[in-house]
Image 1: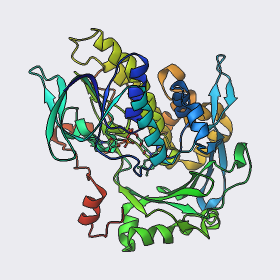
Image 2: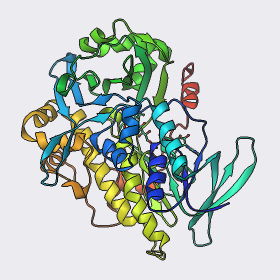
Image 3: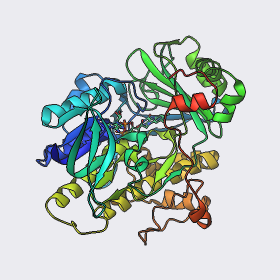
Image 4: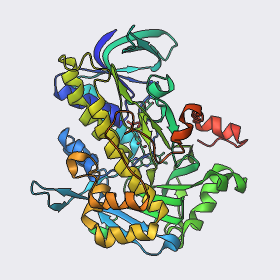
Length: 461
Ligand SMILES: Cc1cc2nc3c(=O)[nH]c(=O)nc-3n(C[C@H](O)[C@H](O)[C@H](O)COP(=O)(O)OP(=O)(O)OC[C@H]3O[C@@H](n4cnc5c(N)ncnc54)[C@H](O)[C@@H]3O)c2cc1C
């Protein structure tokens, strides 16, 4: 089989990439290993993510399907006090902030809608798993070997492979990219489920809107999310350092139920009468960064190359925006530009990396200095922080802003984009430049089952 563009993974990143390609007249193949709908975590969107959906003409569909409207994020500090609110807002042509809304999504419904829409618009969806990369003599990625559900294998040749495989990081695991570094938040573990009976706010807009995201933290690295996914059901997650869980000697199910009220009194109040309508899922080890994630014949998108920390819900935003940003690069490459370049997508790579660095610096400052962070959000950098929370993180969006530059100073961190080999250094990880040549990445646990087995724990996911 042959195609111009092969997309590995039919999650939101893959489907968004397909729809942008289709808009430009390219009919891609999406290779997806799972039958949709399937459960997935990542339910709260930024304003910028909603902007991508509007650009793809999906606003009407989102409204008709009644995805809950998010007006902003309310964060409850230690002990459930010091709450602060950041609204969703867009920027008009004069770069003035304009109030906005985005959506919360039950991922099984949203991802199925996105994949179905890609198919309706002309993408070919193939059920199966990419297992191996095909390379030309000069190293260029020229396609993959796939396995059909029945076990038969087949080659798919492509001018460009877009890796949208999420945390499976397909091309990185195949050693096509640069190394995959373990990130600063890899010792965390997240437990989550869908529940009924969660107590929401009751407003229709602004700070007390009923479908807003709530983030509640107890202390450094111990936090919880509360995200309404329909009129009845709320997604709740509890995230802690995994040592905290191992010490407890509890099953994931029991740990989730017992720890929720311990996060803070506010969460205890909101979850007193909940009932689980979905089993408790677990994700350990979720922080990593892949260097040189674009190259001859390939581009990695979203989680396929970097995941920082989900505390402020940026995953969907990054995946769909990177898809949008990559497509013009893919089109010009297909039209013959940069064909002989060592890395035809290096500008795109640097651009995306700068956006993710803004997020990393913000999240790191939040965990390192939460009180200073809350003050910046409230007072000194209110507009700049509204931009970041809304997903405006790229150089074309006035980033790094003065807020981010201040955070870098406070973190004693310099970012240098001057040289190809410098800019992607994973500062927020355990990477040590002086040890680089000796350093081998830790194996990131591939599946929750592997990790639970390794830890002698019962799998609940
Ligand atoms: C605890 C936690 C909480 C989170 N909360 C949020 C949140 O509130 N908001 C938010 O925006 N983000 C959140 N995220 C992040 C979010 O889940 C991801 O960023 C988002 O799903 C990325 O989309 P994607 O399309 O890149 O990958 P995915 O959605 O993971 O899709 C990848 C697809 O690729 C397929 N695939 C993988 N390997 C292969 C292969 N070899 N062959 C064929 N198909 C393959 C998979 O089956 C999958 O369908 C959270 C993440 C975690 C860990």
